[in-house]
Amino acid sequence: MKNKQVKFLKQLLETPSATGTEIAVAELVRERLAGTADEIQTDVMGSVHARLSGTGVAPSLMLSAHMDEIGLMVTYISDEGFLSVSSVGGVDAAILPGMRVDVHASNSYEPLRGVVGRKPIHLIEPDERKSVTPIDKLVIDLGLPAKRVKKLVMVGDVITFGVGFERFGKNMAVSRAFDDKAGVWVAARVLETLAKEGRAPGDFIVAATVQEEIGTRGAITSTYGLNPDVAIAFDVTHATDYPGIDKTKYGKIVCGEGPVIARGPNINPAVFERLVAAAEAEGLPYQIEAEPGVTGTDARSIQITRGGIPTGLVSVALRYMHTPTEVVCLDDLDATVKLLARFARDLGEDACFVPGMGDAVTEDEDEGETAAQERFDETGVE
Image 1 (cartoon, rainbow, N blue to C red):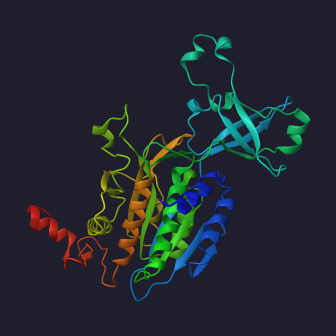
Image 2: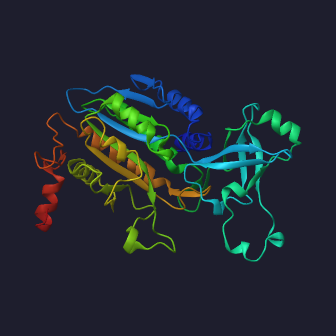
Image 3: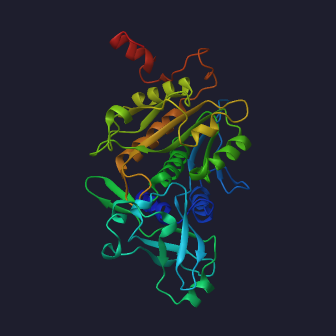
């Protein structure tokens, strides 16, 4: 990944956007795509829609990625100036004690540094040490006099993990909020790639959505308003390449082995086949993930909007989801951009997504055969 692209990714990751407070990241997206997209709009929910017009008559494609991240919210300010909090999204209480956080106080221009306080182990009864301290029993210490705290902070203010982006290892990176700022980065890069390489046959729309972490709410309204012909949701998925994860239950998903293409009832089969064909046409490694039920992503809402939208789901493997130390392989992000750009370019006007009613796969223009036909010729198995 080039340094200028890493810089944009870092900006996204380190711009706070706890669910319901995505305004600053939305502004980053608008600024980034202002010189490339033909049209940019922001809906009343706060989701950003950037459209790149197509070159002909072909299905419109929406690529959805959510801008919000998990966090905490102030529920009470004690007389001593300590903050009580509740979770915004799926926060694991076990990781919080001792953590440094940023309190986005209503009456402070800059975030306030806080620490998550808990009784030290010396003062915890032996039986208590065996259990996780619930979030409502933790406090945020701002290190300020109570009077000052009450002047700056209001009930309802949000809090994000006080960590940012860092590269480590071999093409690996760690940060809070890869879920799903990585997707926002991918969506923006796909639009930029298509603009540079001659556009797609149909309109391509980036939907940077809000409030995914509390029920894919932005995806519901964005999809209804945009009404695309076909859609892809991008998110992160659980890597299973480290100790303690049962691969027989969760599958084999490895950081660095390419984009993850979901398959299951939440996924239109023709979209799945076209994604696989696009990966093979580009010579990209890819992984397949079984999703036997409704996915916990924007795809769950997109698929059943209006009369139904043919929907796919592409992810990258992520270690330690919903922690301050989410880990991805940067090579997977680059490969996903190539996959989705190819998928968009190969969407012709004759594309059919009604199950069982048309050719589901993309034509590999270089070889003159479909990728699915090539696999059949080689193996005898469809």
